[in-house]
Length: 242
Image 1 (tube, rainbow, N blue to C red):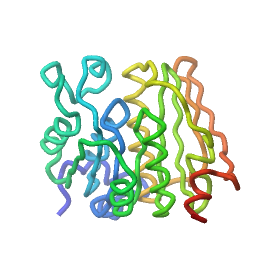
Image 2: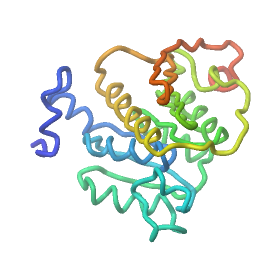
Image 3: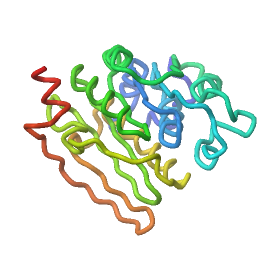
């Protein structure tokens, strides 16, 4: 029997009971439990995704509190993943929640991505994203990428099995420290990532694999562009031929 918490989404065209049952069987892996990761985790859990695993090595800092809404002043110094795990389990105990509070490495990424149906890149550093992207390419799993800086954001669904990957968009290492961000923008983009993940899992609407959304919330502009697969991509080509 489907829990009443999901009643308001069962009437969505193309979703229904079948979509809810698909979500209940789905497994999602999320890299990052910060500004993008938390809203994505909350809305994936609220929708009824059956199994959600996430990883974040950081501890809560005061600078996180403008956007990372599951954490409070009393959590400063604690592991983000462990704090988030407790609150997400209370939020929806029907979901099989798991968390890692350590750096993502190649072995862990391969294991978790291999078990997932889709992976979400909610990280704020390029090195972790590349580890996740390599694992997604090797496993043939779709990877949903999100990033925010100020009022600007990007979102893309990569699937190396049928198109470009993260390395096709960014073949070179992306330098820099975590950007300045506005909490409301990270919340919107994290929620958009959850929506896109649900669409992908349930196969609802148009296929946006290989398309990049460039959003400017200050100007109110949203542009979709196509990302081309690179024959010299350091990630998907190396994963295919390595």
